[in-house]
Structures are given as C-alpha cells and as structure tokens.
Image (cartoon, rainbow, N blue to C red):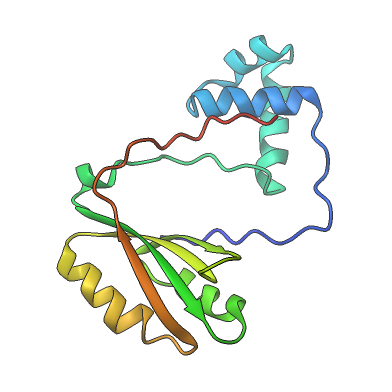
Length: 160
C-alpha cells in the first residue's frame, strides 16, 4: 500500500468551473472516457486529458480503484483513536508506514490521531495493536472502534 501524504499548502489554487465539472464526472465514474467527459463539460477529448493530467500531477485529485475489503479477505476493519505525547506528525509518519493502516488523520479533541486499519482477522488486529501501533515511541494510549458494518462510503461529494 502506498501512503498519500498531502503537503500543506498555504492557499489552494481556485479551480474553474470546467475543472470542477471534470472532477465531478470522474467522481461519478472514474472509468468515464475523456470523450464522454468532454461532451459533458464542453471540451475536446485532448483538452480533458490535459486537464486531468494537470489535476493529478498537482495533487488536486487521484484516480483509484476502491475495493470492498470483505470481498478481498479482510474481515476486520477498525478506527483507532491514538493519544500521543510529543510531536504528532512524527507518530503519524510511522503509522503511515504500516501496511494495515489505510487512513491517518491528525485531529483535535480526545485523540491526537485517528487511523483506519484493514485486517484479515481479529488476531491480526490484536497483533497490529500490541506489536506495532502501541510499540511506537510516544504513543500513550489507543482506543479501538471495531466496524460491525460499513453503512456508507462514497467519494462523490462534488467540488462545491
């Protein structure tokens, strides 16, 4: 698994309405052809291809396949709240390097960091918690929220 690390930009560059429309088209169907998108947004296929390349190279968007972990043999998902002493960014980098971790966010509130994990079994989750996550220096405590059912997960919220 690769880690997506988003650099903190002082101010995001505003997107024009056409770029937003392209993103929304791809959020609905990431396999939509450039020709189809072009018809929908009023550009040529080549112009859409250039814009998509620019949007991906700049880090504004990614085009990825989203899988159902259960159908791939990962029967345990959980969100883990982590309390840290010291620099949360250092711990977040170490957590990001763990294969079972697919989401890392620094937060404010009861937890300093939230991580989502995908494991094959409860035994793998126990090992991950005890041998990897809690073994990271400056991890003070963890609280695990085991997923019983994933009710909704969508990536088509648009660009507003």
